[in-house]
Length: 185
Image 1 (cartoon, rainbow, N blue to C red):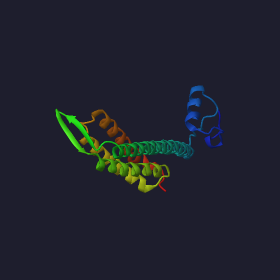
Image 2 (image 1 turned 180 degrees about the horizontal axis):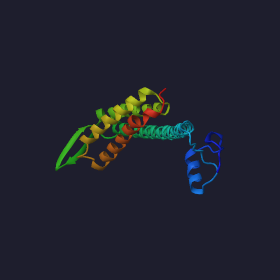
Image 3 (image 1 turned 90 degrees about the horizontal axis):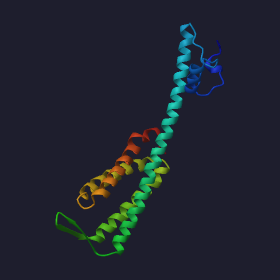
Image 4 (image 1 turned 120 degrees about the vertical axis):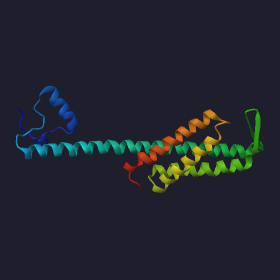
């Protein structure tokens, strides 16, 4: 039976160490002492190291979610700019047919709206890569507004609207639920 304490062991990851020692009955397992103090020290050490490993993975996963949100915002911003420029340079009217009725509106105002929102979305996505706190707030606001606008457009473009709403919800999740583990700058 091995009498070395975990802290003296050369193994770096307690979860791997414990699995290996349980499976093989090996010598590298942490010593469980019959005294209460030594056992408490062992438990404290394992908890500290396990929480360090978990927080490292959590922070890394959260940073990945923030990068995902940034990429979606940058791509959405580019699409918004292209859509706005196409509306400004293309025909003067846009129409959609819903339940046999034709909906028509002026494209110039819609084009400028898309150019402005697209540029703001693009800049917000780029700032999100840098970890700016204001970018997190603006990203959530843009995603909420985009979801509301897409709900209005469901009768005209149902599949596109639902895809954009799903991406907006993922952006909100990434920034709100996972963003707390990523330090703001």
